[in-house]
Length: 143
Image (cartoon, rainbow, N blue to C red; front, top):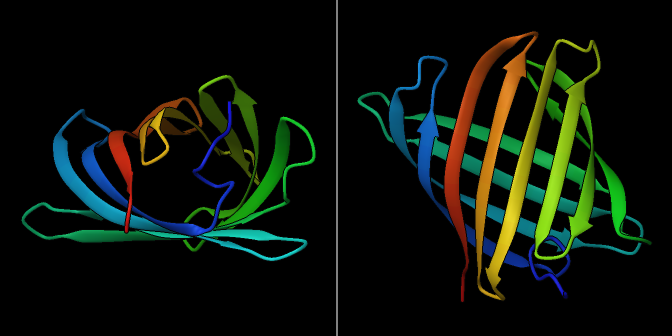
């Protein structure tokens, strides 16, 4: 299966739900911009939690271009530190696993291809053995 998210440059709109440590649901909107150069792909994105006091979470992944059905990526988050991860392609799904440099934070995300223009993402983040967050969003390719 040929994937369009991450594998092709472009902008994706993000809409869905975010769940905090206690399972409280908040609507989320955001954007993910994929940029390719010869030796590095970037995924620059943000999610805005649309609660009473909106919170914006920004992130930038530096992705080694795929040579096989998996690759590695790195990101830096001011509150968590450096994250390292892997993307693995399995049929219609891009699976991501990550862990922080100190080993205290970890997470996983599955991006399921619905069509060339639509992916469904499901993921979670942990600190040690405690849930930090989870999410259920759709990524729609912008025109």
